Length: 85
Image (cartoon, rainbow, N blue to C red; front, side, top):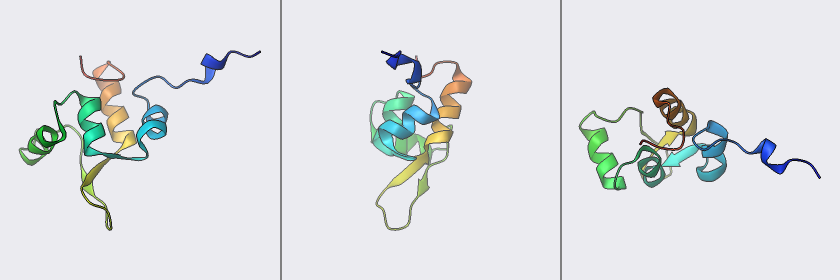
């Protein structure tokens, strides 16, 4: 028996976010990861220029998305993987 926990990605890492939400993270998931109370609150922050990561429209898909790597980098820079304290 090997150590199954040895290969588990830390919450907030690019690999963890990609595995759980995909490479393009929907606004509801970005809101959750960054500690916003809701997706509309996240969209208001983006519209006001207060969002620390870019949201992008994807042709053929509704809504806007963030790159998993952008979310992970922001969380890593905070020093609080997995969410905002």
